[in-house]
Image 1 (cartoon, rainbow, N blue to C red):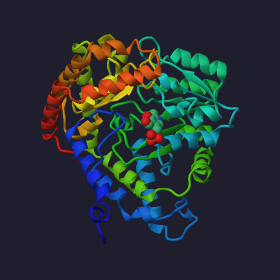
Image 2: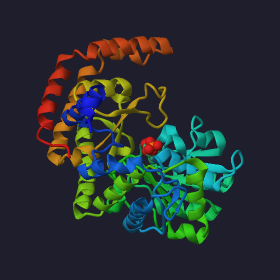
Image 3: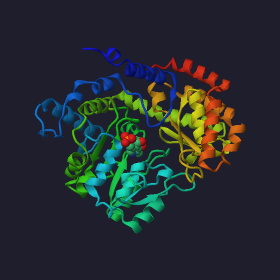
Image 4: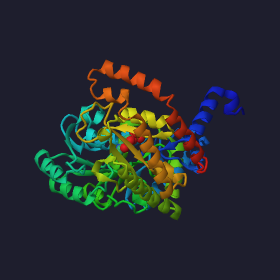
Length: 446
Ligand SMILES: Cc1ncc(COP(=O)(O)O)c(C=O)c1O
């Protein structure tokens, strides 16, 4: 059989280029990770050829005995790893997984979801008006307080007043420990289901580097491709508390995933999830996750020494959210310039951001990939220095000075083009890029 290189050299070459890029940059987007070879092998296996609509031992197609074993293994490993009673491993990704939970439990246009506002670090699927979660269901957003911490008193007050059917706890850009116990008390008081979306912190939870929501939440959802270091995908879990509240919860969720929302599961993805769940139980994974947090804390401390303004003042997990307004640098421009220097982060809104989402005031960065590559505290000190050098290089220049004052979309976009044109040729940034490449060559990717 012809290999990819012969059949489709265009795609082959693009994959090779991406492989090289991933090796040569400091990948610091906190929702990303580099999976193991074993996970990749399962993902690229013949399991992609199979159709298996339904669930183990209840399929609509023949030839699924082996697939059943794969799916059951994935379920059993998730149950053991997280200590839950019921698992669905079929969601294609995190967004459909959250959507399936809503489909299972809510009446459209009637029932309410309460979730952390997108502008304050929640995910699109936690009730944003541009997502199905905000279009089909009533939404009550909660926020962070002035210290950048979840305002639990506001959550309680809103929950008592609005009586949501589901309270979502979990976030996409929140650097602190989430008090799942407090969320549990609030949801019990108002009779809501508590959905803990642990997509970002699942790997930390299994390693004991962040408290688990399992004793308090009814449903726990996680993507598998972030700190958990698996393939893209998601799992929905029902806890003991969940079954106590609603003995039919597992069946309701299964029905919502298939046939409610999805068709046939991606069996190659299920197998790769099973592999990552096995790996996440290894002692080396526990050490890895603890190092992720240690690295993030050192990075935060070092950046604070350079007067970076960290939302909430620091971090307890794998990510940092930096408000760059005090440095007179816009988040979008900073993210672009950092990439020119070989440091990949994402632009991000900060609480009460006066700027629009495309040009937010902050950046979000994290340590899962760096730690997978074996970097430790010492390397974080160096990386903080580089980040500071990049921001120093672009702050207050002719382009930066003007940006905050540009109010129309056209003017901003013109400015943006001019900024990009200049910054890709900036000598200082290109020199940092050279150093970053050399540095990265000491830390092999899996
Ligand atoms: C907290 C949270 N939930 C859900 C998702 C959605 O996952 P996906 O991008 O796989 O749909 C994300 C992704 O960033 C997330 O951060």
